[in-house]
Amino acid sequence: MIAPETIMRVAELMAKAERAAVLTGAGVSAESGVPTFRGKHGFWKDEDVMKLATLQGFLADPKKVWEWYDWRRGQLAEVEPNPGHHALAQWERMVTGRGASYSLITQNIDGLHELAGSKTILELHGNLWYARCLKGCCAELKHIPDTPLPEYPPPCPWCDSILRPHVVWFGEQLDPTVIEESFNVSGAADLMLVVGTSAQVYPAAGLPYITSRAGGKVVEINLEPTELSYTADFALHGKSGEILPQLLEKVRELVG
Ligand code: OAD
Image (tube, rainbow, N blue to C red):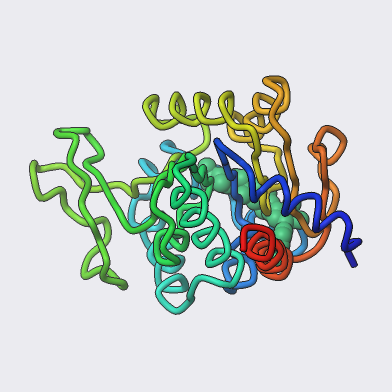
């Protein structure tokens, strides 16, 4: 149970943020039924990361890797954004509605923020609903809404190669434009909410420290304490699908 004064103090920061930022991880989608990566029921407990989430693993067995991603896409096709996603989209509308800036940086590849109505989204790790040419024959992304796919691996529609999921695998660089914009947003933010991430995978995990060092406030919302809890101005422990709507309700009361 979070003290009502704490909810009020965070809501006050949210109500007056001029440059609002949000960083989300798998935890924000947990209440939609999407498994997280670490922990008791996480993906990386039962699956071999090196076989499924590296370029080497894909090159060794593209069919198997595509089947795994398609299975995840199939799971996602069944789920919906939860009250946490919706509260963030509502906060964005409030912030931008009064002329302030808002950016949501996500490590998630599930597309649920967009479905909930969030507009300014920086997807650090890609998006499961898109694929691109393995050889990089062009910069095009192919939207692949159907699941299951008719064939594994899907052929590249632009050349004789195959498509790969548009996600960042271990050992790969993040899209330089997306990470640069994320650094800029984090450095400029006067408030960053960090929601549902174990804060272990860099460079995403470093973003709240950039905000903090630049003088912005950092609020962590997570089921449990993380490394970031020591630095955060507020660490709220509980489900994001419950805490975020509670905060939004207070923000609404404050702004009238
Ligand atoms: P993790 O699985 O590492 O962490 C999920 C976090 O969410 C944990 O700290 C949980 O305590 C928290 N959590 C779970 N349920 C929650 C809830 N209902 N409300 C609030 N918090 C909750 O996921 P990420 O931090 O997103 O990268 O992992 C980062 C990256 O590691 C992923 O993007 C992925 C993975 O390897 C790639 O695939 C490139």
